[in-house]
Image (cartoon, one colour):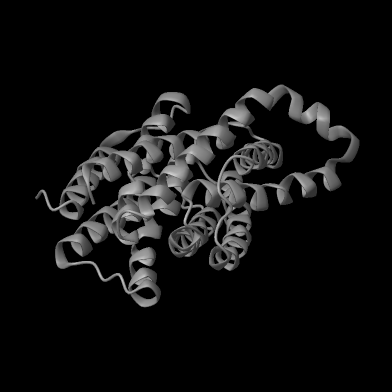
Length: 283
């Protein structure tokens, strides 16, 4: 993984944490994800007009990824509805890299070396453990529904990460792949919301339009950077490095949602730095 690829993934992590925070901020999760998904579909359609059409070999992966992304969105909405941002976001993101490592080794034959594997394990297991420990130390009763939804979200993230890693490499055009992915996955949630809310939908969307479209722009930019990186480096280290968004998410939770940062988050930051160093072979 070159410094340029690492920088792109770290920038994607900032964008990802930011759009998740915007989605959590809008308490009506269906309205929130309708704006983000619908905005992503519009941006995808615009990009598709200028980008090269993905190769035929990429389309089965595109369709599978769109389906998994929809499951991911539904699980993420459920997680945000049940738990605090600072609780569910680290668990959802932290469980993904270990699963990606296993799936990439089995299906893509990308077996990390010992140092990279140690980095993935440190970054993932440490962050998940600290997220759960932080809830316990705060004296709160664990919200098992939120934890299960967040864990299932992490599994969905792992699956679409591997699917898209294979698909974008087969596509021959990262920009075309992200454009069509956003277009395919972005129409389902707005269509469902339109069916459920009918005549009231426009009035419910209007107050949140700017934040929702900002979230859509952050989402598509962040994932486009990840897809580009997946054409330049192995999937497992990218998945683990991308989860530095957990630290960004913790900071956002502390500053904007008044959630306690505390020792667990500081320890998580240290573990993430150690894990990144191991993955990049600098420690």
